Image 1 (cartoon, one colour):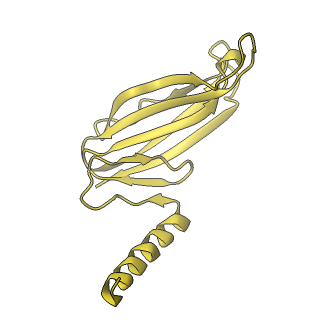
Image 2 (cartoon, rainbow, N blue to C red; image 1 turned 90 degrees about the vertical axis):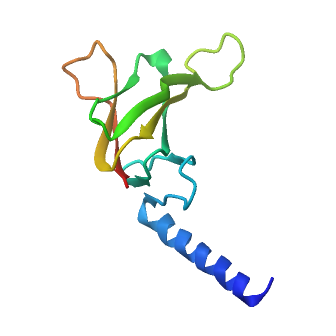
Length: 140
């Protein structure tokens, strides 16, 4: 590797190291189709056309479920899966096995949205959620 190539690699690694500590997910240059993982309690930056993936730990056998408020307007469009619950691998007959709930969104136009997810039981309407998760999404 020549010194110019080594310098370019070092610069790229430095840039990504800066993003790693910022709580912001960088958009990959020239890769609109790349999927970005949402940063919980942080900011995720997307480009129009990019897909956002969010997965939260869950355990549907307890009656708790994640719900997302429809606050993404026309900046994000729901994709698939959307609210799909996947149970961790387990032996037959085992109950109380955890898993994750997953959502995908597609960035449709520039803007900023805040996605808020609430983890609670549907029949406990007067009780605050057991947990919340917030994602700030910036689409450029």
